[in-house]
Amino acid sequence: MSAFYTTVSLTLVVILGLLGQAPSVRDGIFTISQAEYGQAVYDDQCVSCHGSMTAIVPEMAALLADYTFRSRWKGRSLGELFELIRDTMPQDSPGSLSSQQSAELVAYILSSNRLPAGAVDLADDVERLSQIEFEP
Image 1: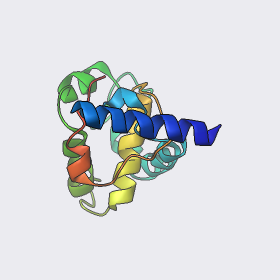
Image 2: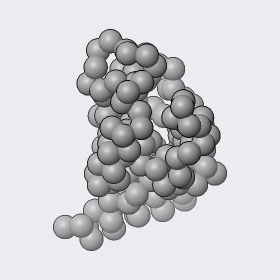
Image 3: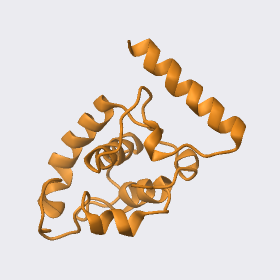
Image 4: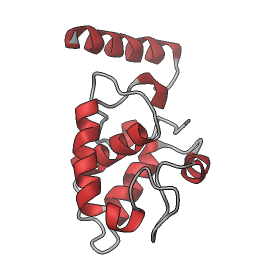
């Protein structure tokens, strides 16, 4: 079953590439396990400021899975979100997250915004992520 999803995901990426279309957040661009790793990083590094992904009212910092977040990031690239996380978070130790942890956090944020998972991990390469727009 896993090989099937990998084949379908890779085929979709190839087809979109041939059509000149960038991958979409709706194409399953991260895996469930990557989002789970991202949740562990989030619980350790982010929840104290941003609160739970299911929170309705922000604690100290903006919520990352609500209408305001989706509106603010709509049309912006995942590369921009990735760089913001990697370079400026957490607030008490900016730049301390690895590229892999930052990609896992982006995967968790996408998952928490009810976007579908796929068979291939989200890249931790800002150039590739910059080609993908956040379209909730």
